[in-house]
Amino acid sequence: MNLEALLRIAGVLQIALAAAHLFLSKPLKWPEELSRLSPINRRIFLVHTFFIGLILVLFGALSLFAPETLLVRTDLSDFVLVGLSIFWTIRRVFQWTAYDRSLWRGDRFRTVVHGVATCVWLYLAAAYALTLVGR
Image (cartoon, helix red, strand yellow):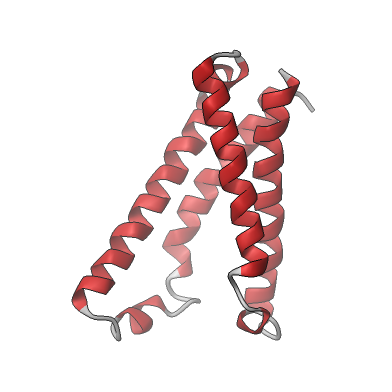
């Protein structure tokens, strides 16, 4: 597979992750969980969730619609690729360290999400790192 295809797939995955935020609310019971928070903490959660989704869409769009900007070796493209590689590597590590196994084990939906997320984080970290060293 060529590097452009790796980046385009990474873009689709990040946009899909952003879209998933719209559908995770119900299975994760966010409305009832958020109702227990103070108004300021509820707003912080909602604002942070929005901006996480937005950054996923923006980096996804960069990778999907303008991969050539990352394939040309420049200081900026190097910086972006290193940053995205580090970001997704750390996200994958957190998938296994920040979430106690009791939060997903025994729950089929959460176990599947955990497994799929692990694969997605691994793919994204690898795609950006491979692009950095392979161009």
